[in-house]
Image (cartoon, rainbow, N blue to C red; front, side, top):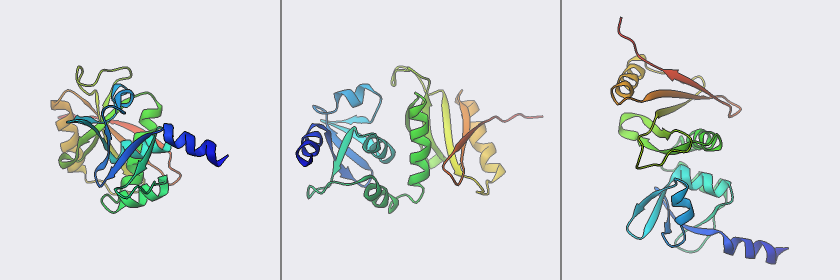
Length: 182
């Protein structure tokens, strides 16, 4: 049994851990790239933190650090939480959207938008994202002027703003947010 697990681990694509996510050599990452994961940087496919968590959780990659230590999902969440306290909530939203068949890319953090979401079957790079998604935990106080600003920016960009509210059980409810001037 241990030998079977070791052989299975060898067949998985190996991702090298970074504080921002992980990197995989392009030679090993063609299928992941074709499936809408990561961004090409030189000879590597660079994954975001949530992409790395999702692919590890789905058994598509193994994640190792500089010393060759392999990370479990819990260890990886703990590692990334040092850099982003909301990483688990982001992982839940990202995973839910991916499981629904959407292509999900990192949003514009400086603008408070966590994810750009492409329609099902879209080709990233050839089509623009259809949705901008912001995730919040249930019970979080949300500043209305901030929500207004996000909605206005989304409308100006021709995209729909979606608010993903994550409850205490990890269930997600999506709300379409728009802004109307009266």
